[in-house]
Length: 333
Image (cartoon, rainbow, N blue to C red; front, side, top):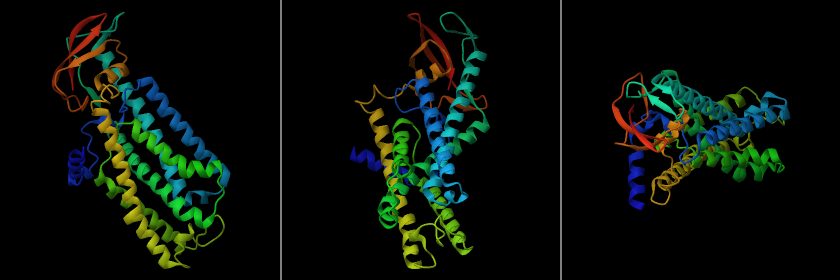
């Protein structure tokens, strides 16, 4: 496994990994494991409602726009947006797949009977493709920044400011990382080390905001001239400078590296000999999403993706089972 990990690590350090290239859009929509579509939809909906409930509670608890000054609150709100986008994209893709099946097939009592002997590709609208790229970007930001927030809070902020250990505090600085870990383990969204560049830009944007806020005379909830005590640019500029460098050059890269390793471990287990039975059968899963009752038995060849932009694709024979009988179908992948 060491040599495989090293090879994967080397592949991550390439320029092409910087882009959010959707070679397999389904990875951003489906789970990594053999979870039924219905359960996966419910999971996405639950996480959306749970996160938005906490965001609403935050707004009511502080009753001031200043609650959005803190990185932990900003990241948690972005997490809510990520879950909203992930759920909407999943529903959107499911509607596209179902419409596609209905347009290419005629319903029968047993399932679907192919009209014309073939089923075309699952079309991926340009707007959905753009929404998936945004979802991927938010996934990267939320994952690494949530771990960073937890590490920074318990090592720097909490020992200095001694906040009470309330349910709210634990959820913001422990629950956020648990939610991130759960999504990393269950979803099949890829993580690339090269995407740290986007995290770096996000961190620089927040640091620039704290500088402008301090320079303009802004105060925190306690009317102190800083957002965090370690970012007191006027009172302790040296401490603030080292804190900024520590976050950007040490803490955030370590967090992203940990997130990438969790993603690597998930893929390794799912595709390994022991985890193969638990891994997702992609064709069968999307077959169910489409509402077809016939189970996918085999697929000749391994297509790059089950989605295709516009209506281009190459035909691949697909075997489907219906009442114990196998009928040959053709699916564009």
